[in-house]
Length: 83
Image (cartoon, rainbow, N blue to C red; front, side, top):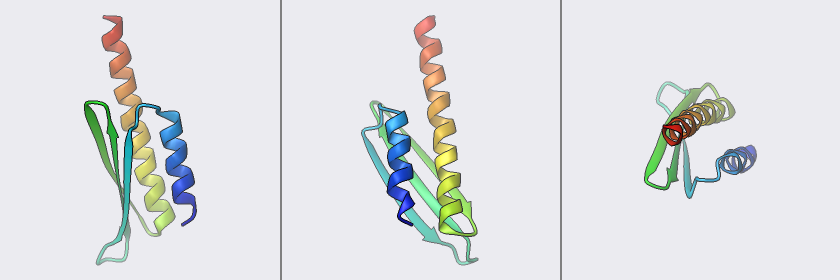
């Protein structure tokens, strides 16, 4: 799981407004893995989860969800600025 810091750092690098990031990985009773990612930004936060049969796929799912949420947030901020 050495990729975790690299992938999370890449996400933080693409979204400069992130001020803090917390990551946790759990294994559920059913054997699936759950990745929890909490990103703090000025005046907001993004909390996402991802599931997968192994730690890497759970992390990937959480990072994709975070990317979607951050992009939606950026688009909404841009739209607000245009009005």
